Image 1 (cartoon, rainbow, N blue to C red):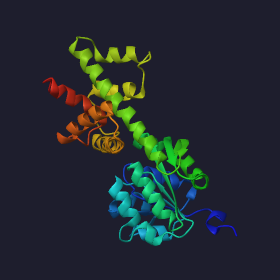
Image 2 (cartoon, rainbow, N blue to C red; image 1 turned 180 degrees about the vertical axis):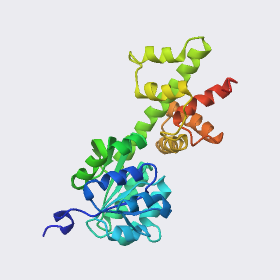
Image 3 (cartoon, helix red, strand yellow; image 1 turned 90 degrees about the vertical axis):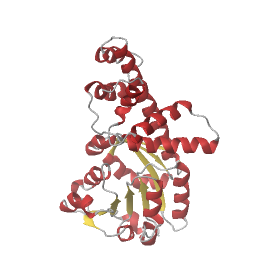
Image 4 (tube, helix red, strand yellow; image 1 turned 180 degrees about the horizontal axis):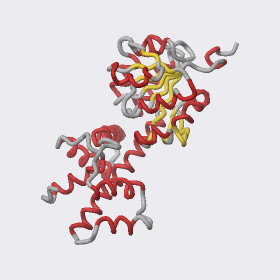
Length: 301
């Protein structure tokens, strides 16, 4: 007998309408699709409720009315609390439901959570996204997902609404692995750009012209183009907050330690991000990593 959840348009819920979750929810609501929403603070969901979303007081209540549940929260403990804590998703989800976790968490924890949900007949995808708030608004996020083929097939129409690229990396946890790899490249490259522009300025060259010259060659990258421009303009308004990037690199370092791996460049980038957060500047964009270098050489700009 066919699963009734898969024979009709699925009811969708989203937990965590924050910086990324809110524009993702808004895109999911396009075309009149109903959406249930839950947040720790009711105010965080007000714009969505005003646009027609249904407020749910708990994650359990949201899961009870949803076939597919998106989760967009801060870190591993938050995801665990939303799923398995008091009044959590597990208490309300019906067999055959699907959880799509967009949060950045430990790959090992993601696999464990998927296993615990599967014991209750609930599927899970760890569908990590890259691109930040602007891409979430435009629906051009890059989605890296881990999970079963059938779960992805059910999720794909919704993932295509929020992302321009959807890559199935592998089984549960693989999406988180890909996200960790993404954050290594991003953080290490931004640190490299900060060092390049600092060196250029101290050697008497125009950092803007050096950046333009490098942008036409093998050193070209989005980090050089975008974060380099922010560094030169001293515009550290948050795109990706340094505190969030520091958290992501913390997951990388923890995973490496558990495997006995030495990731020296990742460790340096993590240290620089932690120094920025420790200086009370975690809400600045990751491009503010250049400020840490400047302080190290006594250049307090």
